[in-house]
Length: 253
Image 1 (tube, helix red, strand yellow):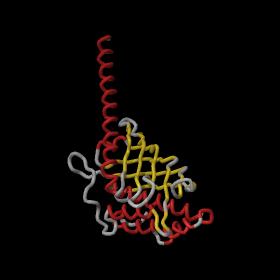
Image 2 (image 1 turned 120 degrees about the vertical axis):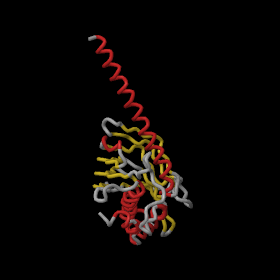
Image 3 (image 1 turned 90 degrees about the vertical axis):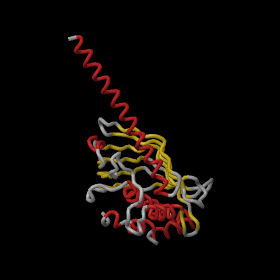
Image 4 (image 1 turned 90 degrees about the horizontal axis):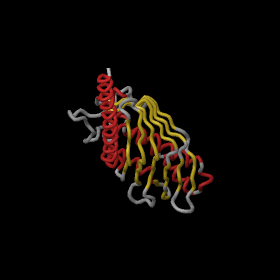
Protein backbone atom coordinates (compact mmCIF):
# COMPACT_ATOMS: atom_id res chain seq x y z
CA UNK A 1 0.00 0.00 0.00
CA UNK A 2 2.82 2.33 0.90
CA UNK A 3 4.58 1.64 -2.41
CA UNK A 4 1.33 2.28 -4.27
CA UNK A 5 0.93 5.66 -2.57
CA UNK A 6 4.52 6.55 -3.44
CA UNK A 7 3.91 5.61 -7.09
CA UNK A 8 0.68 7.62 -7.19
CA UNK A 9 2.45 10.55 -5.57
CA UNK A 10 5.18 10.44 -8.21
CA UNK A 11 2.60 10.32 -11.00
CA UNK A 12 0.76 13.32 -9.56
CA UNK A 13 4.06 15.15 -9.20
CA UNK A 14 4.93 14.48 -12.85
CA UNK A 15 1.50 15.68 -13.95
CA UNK A 16 1.83 18.89 -11.96
CA UNK A 17 5.27 19.55 -13.40
CA UNK A 18 3.90 18.81 -16.86
CA UNK A 19 1.08 21.32 -16.40
CA UNK A 20 3.51 23.97 -15.17
CA UNK A 21 5.81 23.37 -18.15
CA UNK A 22 2.86 23.37 -20.58
CA UNK A 23 1.58 26.61 -19.07
CA UNK A 24 5.01 28.21 -19.48
CA UNK A 25 5.29 27.18 -23.11
CA UNK A 26 1.74 28.27 -23.96
CA UNK A 27 2.45 31.68 -22.46
CA UNK A 28 5.71 31.90 -24.38
CA UNK A 29 3.92 31.01 -27.63
CA UNK A 30 1.32 33.74 -27.09
CA UNK A 31 3.97 36.32 -26.16
CA UNK A 32 6.12 35.46 -29.17
CA UNK A 33 3.09 35.53 -31.47
CA UNK A 34 2.01 38.99 -30.34
CA UNK A 35 5.52 40.42 -30.50
CA UNK A 36 6.14 38.89 -33.93
CA UNK A 37 2.89 39.57 -35.75
CA UNK A 38 1.63 42.65 -33.88
CA UNK A 39 4.07 45.10 -35.53
CA UNK A 40 3.32 43.61 -38.95
CA UNK A 41 -0.38 44.31 -38.48
CA UNK A 42 -0.21 47.81 -36.97
CA UNK A 43 2.97 49.05 -38.65
CA UNK A 44 4.10 50.32 -35.24
CA UNK A 45 6.01 48.94 -32.25
CA UNK A 46 3.99 46.29 -30.40
CA UNK A 47 5.24 44.50 -27.29
CA UNK A 48 3.71 42.07 -24.83
CA UNK A 49 5.67 41.61 -21.62
CA UNK A 50 4.35 38.17 -20.71
CA UNK A 51 1.42 35.79 -20.86
CA UNK A 52 0.24 32.86 -18.79
CA UNK A 53 -2.37 30.31 -19.82
CA UNK A 54 -3.44 27.28 -17.82
CA UNK A 55 -3.89 24.21 -20.06
CA UNK A 56 -6.12 22.73 -17.35
CA UNK A 57 -8.70 25.54 -17.06
CA UNK A 58 -7.97 27.57 -20.20
CA UNK A 59 -7.85 30.79 -18.21
CA UNK A 60 -5.00 33.19 -18.72
CA UNK A 61 -3.64 36.70 -18.45
CA UNK A 62 -1.68 38.86 -20.87
CA UNK A 63 0.50 41.40 -19.10
CA UNK A 64 1.85 44.72 -20.34
CA UNK A 65 0.58 45.10 -23.91
CA UNK A 66 1.96 48.24 -25.58
CA UNK A 67 1.08 49.50 -29.05
CA UNK A 68 3.09 52.42 -30.42
CA UNK A 69 1.96 55.41 -32.44
CA UNK A 70 2.43 55.65 -36.20
CA UNK A 71 5.31 57.84 -37.36
CA UNK A 72 4.85 61.60 -37.14
CA UNK A 73 3.10 61.79 -33.74
CA UNK A 74 4.48 63.08 -30.44
CA UNK A 75 3.50 60.34 -28.03
CA UNK A 76 5.34 57.02 -28.40
CA UNK A 77 2.14 55.26 -27.31
CA UNK A 78 -1.16 54.81 -29.12
CA UNK A 79 -2.57 52.63 -26.34
CA UNK A 80 -1.64 50.17 -23.62
CA UNK A 81 -3.33 47.44 -21.60
CA UNK A 82 -1.93 46.57 -18.16
CA UNK A 83 -3.76 43.24 -18.14
CA UNK A 84 -5.97 41.29 -20.52
CA UNK A 85 -7.90 38.38 -19.03
CA UNK A 86 -8.83 35.52 -21.36
CA UNK A 87 -10.74 32.27 -21.04
CA UNK A 88 -10.02 29.63 -23.68
CA UNK A 89 -11.71 26.25 -24.18
CA UNK A 90 -8.90 23.93 -22.93
CA UNK A 91 -9.55 21.25 -25.57
CA UNK A 92 -9.04 23.78 -28.38
CA UNK A 93 -5.47 24.48 -27.23
CA UNK A 94 -4.43 21.15 -28.71
CA UNK A 95 -5.53 22.02 -32.25
CA UNK A 96 -5.35 24.85 -34.75
CA UNK A 97 -8.79 26.35 -34.00
CA UNK A 98 -8.68 28.23 -30.69
CA UNK A 99 -12.07 28.86 -29.10
CA UNK A 100 -11.89 31.87 -26.79
CA UNK A 101 -14.89 32.04 -24.50
CA UNK A 102 -14.20 35.47 -23.06
CA UNK A 103 -11.76 38.37 -23.36
CA UNK A 104 -11.91 41.14 -20.76
CA UNK A 105 -9.84 44.32 -21.01
CA UNK A 106 -10.44 46.46 -17.93
CA UNK A 107 -9.11 50.02 -17.67
CA UNK A 108 -7.14 50.37 -20.95
CA UNK A 109 -5.47 53.68 -21.78
CA UNK A 110 -5.54 55.30 -25.22
CA UNK A 111 -3.81 58.41 -26.56
CA UNK A 112 -5.54 60.51 -29.21
CA UNK A 113 -3.51 63.15 -31.08
CA UNK A 114 -4.77 65.48 -33.79
CA UNK A 115 -3.45 67.73 -36.53
CA UNK A 116 -6.36 69.91 -37.65
CA UNK A 117 -8.33 67.19 -39.48
CA UNK A 118 -6.06 64.16 -39.08
CA UNK A 119 -5.28 61.93 -36.12
CA UNK A 120 -2.96 59.17 -34.93
CA UNK A 121 -5.99 56.91 -34.60
CA UNK A 122 -6.94 57.40 -38.22
CA UNK A 123 -3.35 56.66 -39.26
CA UNK A 124 -3.34 53.49 -37.16
CA UNK A 125 -6.59 52.34 -38.75
CA UNK A 126 -5.10 52.99 -42.19
CA UNK A 127 -2.02 50.95 -41.25
CA UNK A 128 -4.13 48.02 -40.10
CA UNK A 129 -6.21 48.11 -43.26
CA UNK A 130 -3.13 48.30 -45.48
CA UNK A 131 -1.13 45.64 -43.66
CA UNK A 132 -4.01 43.16 -43.70
CA UNK A 133 -4.70 43.89 -47.37
CA UNK A 134 -8.18 45.05 -46.46
CA UNK A 135 -8.68 46.94 -49.71
CA UNK A 136 -8.08 43.83 -51.82
CA UNK A 137 -9.92 41.40 -49.57
CA UNK A 138 -6.92 39.06 -49.50
CA UNK A 139 -5.47 37.67 -46.27
CA UNK A 140 -2.05 38.76 -45.09
CA UNK A 141 0.76 36.71 -46.65
CA UNK A 142 2.22 35.47 -43.38
CA UNK A 143 0.13 33.94 -40.61
CA UNK A 144 0.93 32.04 -37.41
CA UNK A 145 0.74 28.30 -38.00
CA UNK A 146 0.97 25.02 -36.13
CA UNK A 147 4.00 22.75 -36.42
CA UNK A 148 2.35 20.88 -39.28
CA UNK A 149 1.84 24.12 -41.19
CA UNK A 150 -1.89 24.57 -40.63
CA UNK A 151 -2.92 28.23 -40.10
CA UNK A 152 -4.08 29.04 -36.58
CA UNK A 153 -7.60 30.41 -36.39
CA UNK A 154 -9.59 31.99 -33.58
CA UNK A 155 -13.21 32.11 -32.54
CA UNK A 156 -14.08 34.63 -29.81
CA UNK A 157 -17.43 34.15 -28.10
CA UNK A 158 -17.33 37.42 -26.17
CA UNK A 159 -14.98 40.42 -26.19
CA UNK A 160 -15.41 43.11 -23.51
CA UNK A 161 -13.67 46.43 -23.00
CA UNK A 162 -14.63 48.52 -19.97
CA UNK A 163 -13.48 51.49 -17.87
CA UNK A 164 -11.41 52.74 -20.80
CA UNK A 165 -9.90 56.21 -20.92
CA UNK A 166 -8.63 58.24 -23.84
CA UNK A 167 -6.15 61.07 -23.35
CA UNK A 168 -6.46 63.85 -25.87
CA UNK A 169 -3.12 65.45 -26.70
CA UNK A 170 0.28 65.22 -25.04
CA UNK A 171 1.77 67.18 -22.15
CA UNK A 172 0.25 69.46 -19.49
CA UNK A 173 -2.67 70.51 -21.69
CA UNK A 174 -3.83 66.93 -22.29
CA UNK A 175 -7.41 66.07 -21.38
CA UNK A 176 -8.58 62.61 -20.30
CA UNK A 177 -12.05 61.44 -21.31
CA UNK A 178 -14.03 58.27 -20.53
CA UNK A 179 -14.89 55.85 -23.31
CA UNK A 180 -18.15 53.91 -23.51
CA UNK A 181 -17.92 50.18 -22.80
CA UNK A 182 -17.66 47.86 -25.78
CA UNK A 183 -18.96 44.30 -26.17
CA UNK A 184 -18.49 42.14 -29.28
CA UNK A 185 -19.82 38.61 -29.62
CA UNK A 186 -19.25 35.57 -31.83
CA UNK A 187 -16.21 36.86 -33.68
CA UNK A 188 -15.25 34.24 -36.25
CA UNK A 189 -18.11 31.89 -35.36
CA UNK A 190 -19.91 32.23 -38.67
CA UNK A 191 -16.68 31.80 -40.61
CA UNK A 192 -15.52 28.73 -38.73
CA UNK A 193 -12.59 30.65 -37.28
CA UNK A 194 -10.64 33.71 -38.40
CA UNK A 195 -6.93 34.44 -38.62
CA UNK A 196 -5.17 36.64 -36.03
CA UNK A 197 -4.94 39.64 -38.36
CA UNK A 198 -8.65 39.38 -39.16
CA UNK A 199 -9.46 39.24 -35.45
CA UNK A 200 -7.24 42.22 -34.64
CA UNK A 201 -8.73 44.25 -37.47
CA UNK A 202 -12.29 43.51 -36.43
CA UNK A 203 -11.66 44.41 -32.79
CA UNK A 204 -9.53 47.48 -33.45
CA UNK A 205 -12.01 48.90 -35.96
CA UNK A 206 -14.64 48.92 -33.22
CA UNK A 207 -12.29 50.06 -30.45
CA UNK A 208 -10.75 52.91 -32.41
CA UNK A 209 -14.16 53.93 -33.70
CA UNK A 210 -15.23 54.23 -30.06
CA UNK A 211 -12.30 56.55 -29.38
CA UNK A 212 -13.26 58.99 -32.12
CA UNK A 213 -16.87 58.88 -30.96
CA UNK A 214 -15.92 59.66 -27.36
CA UNK A 215 -13.80 62.63 -28.41
CA UNK A 216 -16.34 63.90 -30.94
CA UNK A 217 -19.07 63.78 -28.28
CA UNK A 218 -16.94 66.08 -26.11
CA UNK A 219 -16.17 68.53 -28.92
CA UNK A 220 -17.60 71.51 -27.03
CA UNK A 221 -15.13 70.93 -24.20
CA UNK A 222 -11.99 70.28 -26.23
CA UNK A 223 -12.15 72.97 -28.88
CA UNK A 224 -10.43 72.50 -32.22
CA UNK A 225 -9.36 68.94 -31.46
CA UNK A 226 -12.99 67.98 -31.48
CA UNK A 227 -13.06 69.02 -35.12
CA UNK A 228 -10.49 66.38 -35.96
CA UNK A 229 -12.47 63.75 -34.10
CA UNK A 230 -15.66 64.82 -35.79
CA UNK A 231 -13.87 64.67 -39.14
CA UNK A 232 -12.61 61.16 -38.38
CA UNK A 233 -16.13 60.08 -37.53
CA UNK A 234 -17.80 61.93 -40.39
CA UNK A 235 -15.30 60.74 -42.96
CA UNK A 236 -15.97 57.19 -41.79
CA UNK A 237 -12.41 56.39 -40.70
CA UNK A 238 -13.55 53.42 -38.63
CA UNK A 239 -16.24 52.45 -41.15
CA UNK A 240 -13.75 52.69 -44.00
CA UNK A 241 -11.47 50.21 -42.29
CA UNK A 242 -14.41 47.96 -41.57
CA UNK A 243 -15.69 48.17 -45.14
CA UNK A 244 -12.20 47.41 -46.41
CA UNK A 245 -12.18 44.05 -44.62
CA UNK A 246 -15.71 42.92 -45.46
CA UNK A 247 -14.39 40.28 -47.82
CA UNK A 248 -12.15 38.96 -45.07
CA UNK A 249 -15.13 38.41 -42.81
CA UNK A 250 -17.75 37.68 -45.43
CA UNK A 251 -19.72 40.80 -44.53
CA UNK A 252 -20.42 42.82 -41.40
CA UNK A 253 -21.77 41.15 -38.35
